[in-house]
Length: 158
Length: 158
Length: 158
Image (cartoon, rainbow over all chains, first blue to last red; front, side, top):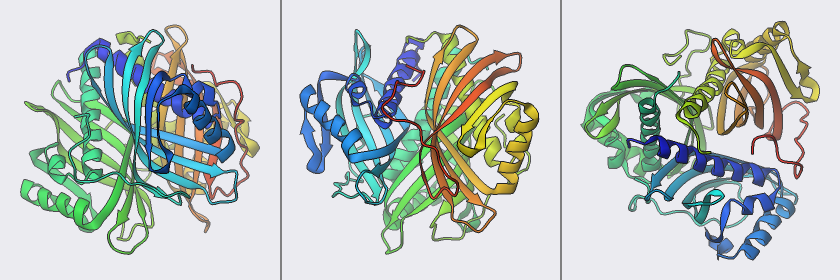
């Protein structure tokens, strides 16, 4: 702000990772999902999904979600804000509007959330090294939801 | 078309303002919302929300909306089109898909709209100096809606 | 990855076409829709909408859709991934979240899809020369839906 050509390229690269994540989730390719995170990534989902930071648990988590729980899904991301922290790291906030159809006989549900991520540049490109999911709202979500706080300090990205 | 590196940077800066707007609204930080508009910004909401152009009214408008009317919200923006008008001004059209949960006991509602904005470059960065909201549709909206015209001259951005 | 300034400009130009498409559809300007495709564009809609590749049929298709079938619509696109194929061609995948209100007395419906497109650079700018629509899901869609396969080879864009 202003952005250099290098930052504009990095900005697009980071958005590409966020989009590849959604497509791999909705394609039911959980192992491709994991490749977009660093091996030691911290995941903070909140509520009863909790936090974890091992690749082994991440495999179990995403393989169960995309295959066993959800029959179909569509993860729409938008409102992507990225703040660079030096040349090789960035913080980002991304809006998520995600539709889910379940294998079980329960009604389709939407979650309205935010991915609050930290990215690092690796030899393989930008990867997510910390993800927190904040929940703004939902429609028919079948589990208990922990809402984000409103009217508090702004989140990290200015 | 083609875009210069300066225009690509400005394009991202303007999108950053649109995203910051949504996040401040959904965070219930109305005073941060106002900072994204010029002091003499013209707001055209249409229908019974009408038009206004003073900062004092804008404070009342956004403080009432994010705090007293809406309990929770999620403002998704996409389809952002920006046409530069010289080096320091731009016209933009942005699609809005906005979910609202109310304090009152009425069903959650969606509005499907467009922000038709004029931006100017200021010492503090790009700011919105005119906003018109066009309504494409809605789901369960509790107020009367004035729809935009279809099949008329294209809106400003080519 | 990294992107050159030329590619970043082309990336934005291509997104501009995708956004102009949605706006022309939702404005009920079908003839402006057609101008965004090459004259010999291949359209693959799947299901009973089938495939076609003549401009004459495209006019009939879009004129019927935006005017006779849909009373109002809102086509939200996001998650736009673009892979360049040389200097003058590109493959893209775009998420679509499209709301439709019908002239007939049937309930509003959403389609959750993907535009899988091939773009070429022409004298008039980037144009779509092949479009396939993949369906991830729907809400209240009144026609039979053919879902995309999940857990298969990734789509073209890496």
